[in-house]
Length: 237
Image (tube, rainbow, N blue to C red; front, side, top):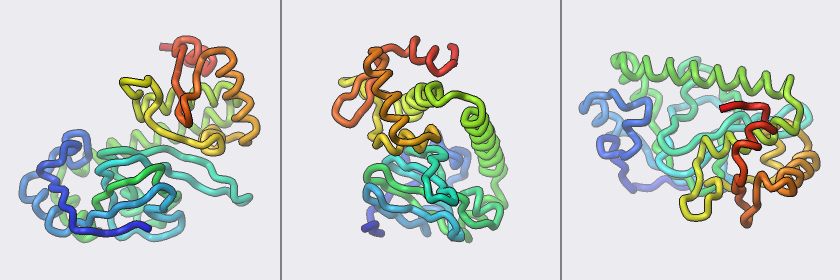
């Protein structure tokens, strides 16, 4: 079960703040967030928020990895995107006074800071830097969503599987020792990311493995030939 606790992560001392939308906040604004925010731990598989619920604040990831996904009429999951350290979640629904259009689910143990709605808007209404950073983030999210929609509509599944493996590497990086992508996804989750059936994803992953483009190390993926994988994905450096 998720739990709230008293462990204190100071915004002023956060190692990820320079990479987040809060990077330009003044000291008094950071102090305001610190005085009211909550710190929550979610275990693997737990929901941070659920599609259709209304937001009461925003979530800032201190550690861990999260998937954001939607369910169609048939109940099949479609992974929309991923989030990691320093990312904020739920800001679009909060700014638009709308319900969440997807669910956020922990891929591993996740530590999150929750900033209540009242405190967030008190800072947002008076901080040009936060407003600008959120506009930039919204623009980036929209561009990525448009690209994903185009890929699903026009790219063959084989190309989408290869492209999404490269996306995982870009998003989470590789372990220095093993060279593996630093995230564990099930075959079903890879299929849901690419918008295809699990059986198809398994077959195409095996094809990439047999062609020595990737390798499975336990439950992780290691890219062996990035240049050829880029060609399979119909991408170019």
